[in-house]
Image 1 (cartoon, each protein chain N blue to C red):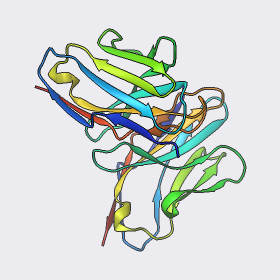
Image 2 (tube, rainbow over the protein chains, first blue to last red):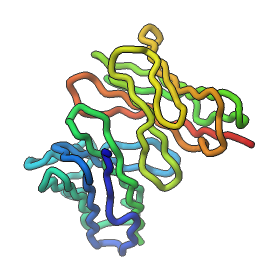
Image 3 (cartoon, rainbow over the protein chains, first blue to last red):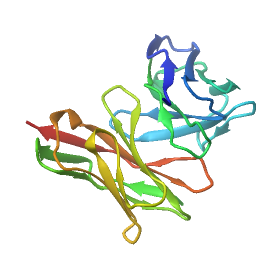
Image 4 (cartoon, rainbow over the protein chains, first blue to last red):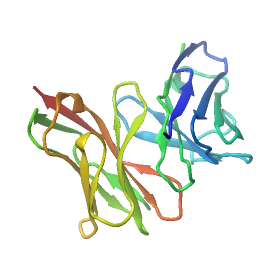
Length: 115
Length: 113
């Protein structure tokens, strides 16, 4: 149980385009999902907390207009990187919890490469 | 401010030997502590957690961790390491009543045959 999927697993795009990443909780409902970014050989950096039916809460320094988060249902959150640039290239990971204060279960990650 | 420290960037151990990956934390409030493992280009896999109760917690793949409140530590241990245990390990803490996790910097475990 507690499986989280992400799609796509990798994506390559041209600079200036937008990319959407999906995060799904497959066997539980999640009122809260989290989006992280991970640079090579580094820890996870929390970008934002995605709340079902309301606006996401962004961490300090994360541009909300660039990283659009939508949590339209209890099993799906999406992260859209708008007008992507090479510096946005990274490994993006989402997580979700069956209960807001429970264990976080992570998706397999999405490798974004912006050319 | 809440924080987690993993003082070792890398731990090297021979297969069959016991392993320890260290984690200390600093929180205001009661901590919930977690260990995750990450294989290359993959998300994090949950290993174990401490919420309350017995200080020794057993988890997946033969791993265990001991919560030490006086030393504010939550070290990950395994009696006999396997080459397949080689991966990146993250310690995380959450404070009671809040859903945000704080992660350590990660420790790379190398198990040599």
